[in-house]
Image (spheres, rainbow, N blue to C red):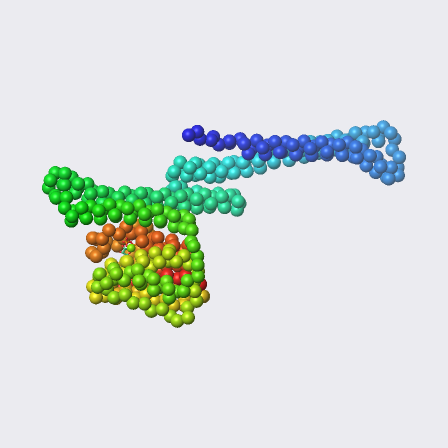
Length: 369
Ligand SMILES: Nc1ncnc2c1ncn2[C@@H]1O[C@H](COP(=O)(O)OP(=O)(O)O)[C@@H](O)[C@H]1O
Ligand SMILES: [Mg+2]
């Protein structure tokens, strides 16, 4: 890649040009005025003085006036020229130094070094704003880059696990060490299902995070949202021996939501809740009016709970708490990230609360109504 060379003389040359232009124009106009108006003024003052001088003395005096005038003009312009020149040299050096630092920093950022920082040049607010914007841009790019790397690493990790299981089993079957019986085929299919789910989730999360979820909003009664979620999850709850109940406040106003997307959010929350509950435990879904005309839907479980240090991260993509109960199951850590993207696309909020491990968890979805 060809690097653009800094034009050290660019700004100075322009200022020089401007200076020479200004000096030429001023010199010409001053000279014109001095040559045309000056002698006339001089003579009229002589006339006003009343005493007519002999012509030889008058000519001499006029000559003296002209020379004095010329000397003053030449000296004045020389001083002005030298001072302007000094100012230009000083200013262009300072600006040059600062812009060189800024362009060096921008070049470093362009070549992928996002840990770049420039100090504000203190050359006025314009330059400080420019430096600040550059620093912010570098910081932003650094965050994006870090996320991209982590995402790729997480993805590679997520894909590697099922593939190595499948590969190991296929090899063992090929060698005749393991029989291709129903149980082993089932195990293999579980792994391919996990890969399929992963690719679906990744598709959904990229769409959701790019804000490309096209929501089909329609007015829905909160009681219907809760009832449908409970109906969809009830089989899984019965299988796990966990009780599932609803508590919906009366007279809640309808909300405008994408019915299926919100169902997906609640399905995610309920799947997490049942997975983190003991057999014999219970989970409640509540709906009530929140602050400022919002609808608050909460999924409350009395299960494993979430330790403080994990709470801030569980909505991140691929973030999973490595709890004993979670270890065996094939979750991808994307469910809550998708839920968050869906809720936020509705202009809502999702939050998690827990008093710590073993104290259950509450996931609250706040939707504008
Ligand atoms: N109700 C809950 N109780 C305890 N921990 C939870 C609960 N819901 C989610 N978590 C934690 O948050 C993590 C992220 O959840 P999620 O994004 O749905 O991913 P996944 O379910 O695939 O692990 C889970 O790994 C789990 O540790
Ligand atoms: Mg989940």
